[in-house]
Image (cartoon, rainbow, N blue to C red):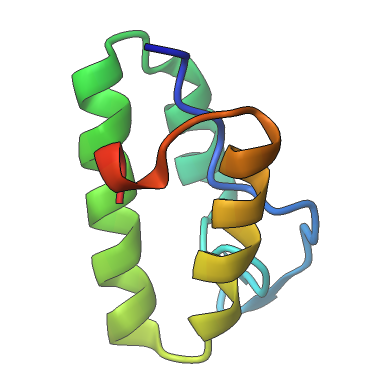
Length: 81
């Protein structure tokens, strides 16, 4: 299985109380994801992130953008999301 890519969708504007307007990550979370080596930890992080996005609201655009990123890298989204 290919390495799970970062949930970052290349917007990187931290305006919503420290959360990126593109993916909802904070700067600390972005660093944390980069340090995760095990695939199971990365997938778990994505599940945490989608729950965070639902709680914060205004992140419905992320799912489509991330799925496009996965498709470009030939990674099945169903295995991650």
